[in-house]
Length: 319
Ligand code: HEC
Ligand code: HEC
Image 1 (cartoon, protein in one colour):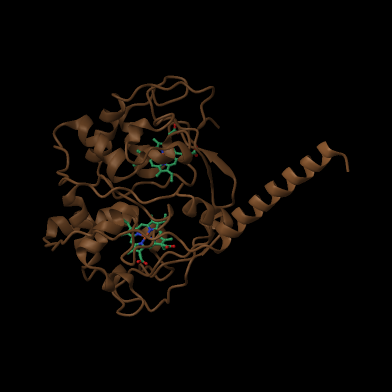
Image 2: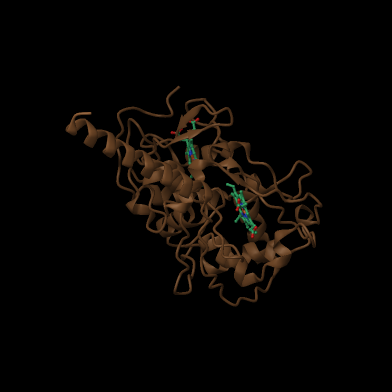
């Protein structure tokens, strides 16, 4: 072999070995664990808090955790198949299979804010994270999860461990998917009479509209949502239940490609029922937010008036 060729063969060989080592590392190394610094919390309950908690859980948790029997006994998440065989956990009051019975209030708040489970492992992105939720709303969630509501009555559906795909393993083990920071200060919710601030809280920190509605999940800044690429300008390619890509809509006030020509009433109707002025129902993964009040969605509309306008090359929601 000529000398330059030998060098090429050697370099290619080394690169191949490195690639193999990387694949082996991703496949076989153990998952990272994180220190569990759960706070001590003793959540008290009252009827108003409980009703708020019910609304939040039905809006944010049930879609993944509800089984066919209507209890929060968990399910196989076929829509997350790119990440492997993903199973949402049984979170009912079942003493053996229900995850909640093992969690203290503080550990639950820590999991929901950061994604770190009580054993220190990390619940990847398919499990919701709410780092900026107000302390009151967090207590509302926990008080509802501890209640005797029918969906939480013991389900004996056993849990199946999630079998991660190579992609999911790579994203977790290289740190692309990583826990959120637990807040260092108490979080007092916004004043509901400051309409834009209240709407902003609902869209960015409580109901998580911004991630689907910005440019892509990969360029979302979950700690500082407004720094996300194409913030609320839509275009995020999200698969529907059949794997067909749906682009999220532009929620900024651009007249051609956003909501600039919509009325407040049209917005409230679209968010709560999915019915749009163009006559085409909003498709999955946009799920109607049936539990939200007109007042809450109206505040979101006030907030959207303050968001920098983005003009896209086309209207992604056009028929
Ligand atoms: C997009 C789907 C999704 C949503 C929304 C979701 N979860 Fe989960 N959740 C999961 C999956 C999947 C797991 C299993 C985690 C894993 O694979 O490690 C899980 C795990 C859990 C666990 C068990 C953790 C453990 O130690 O095993 C609890 C408790 C939980 N979720 C509570 C909630 C609550 C409360 C909400 C609403 C605020 C919520 N989840 C919203 C998908 C979801
Ligand atoms: C899971 C991702 C996801 C979440 C969460 C989400 N949306 Fe959507 N939304 C979409 C997608 C995708 C579309 C486009 C549907 C279509 O074109 O059929 C859409 C469409 C819409 C539309 C219709 C706009 C138009 O121009 O037709 C409105 C309004 C809307 N979303 C508001 C919201 C609000 C407000 C929230 C939070 C309370 C929210 N969405 C949460 C994915 C999401």
